[in-house]
Image (cartoon, rainbow, N blue to C red; front, side, top):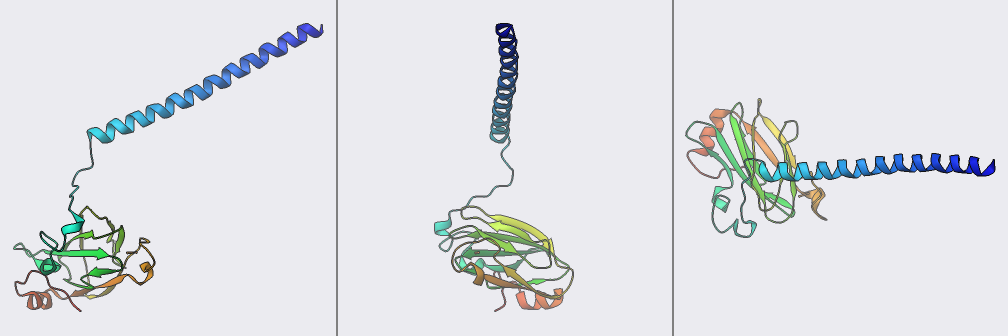
Length: 185
Ligand code: CUA
């Protein structure tokens, strides 16, 4: 009697064990499948529009040299703003742009990852060393916005912020007069 009951208990335990072994094997196979799929997916379709740049030569040559930083008007009337982030400031510290105009920001970092945020707008991105961040937006009205770094970047992070001054389009045109890197102080 006892031995029969013991056997049936044993086979019930066996069945349960096999069932749970099956579940854990299925989990492992499932996870491996996800890893394989995402790996192949990313390798075959890398995100588009990545622009790399050497952070060690930013000041020396290329798009982000000192005289290019700030706002510049394109032939089609849109505006491009180039800026650099570094521990613990932005260059320029005061960005001036026209209202109701397409503004393309292009930024990068000299050292570590910094945040790029224009308060009260949808401008919110990260500035990553080695890469160029591009962001296009439009400011509907004239006014001043704070532009804080919103990514912890070191001991001086809390003091790292700049301004964006939105001016009337005619004021901006007068200010810029064909120059390449215009900013406020
Ligand atoms: Cu730069 Cu926080």
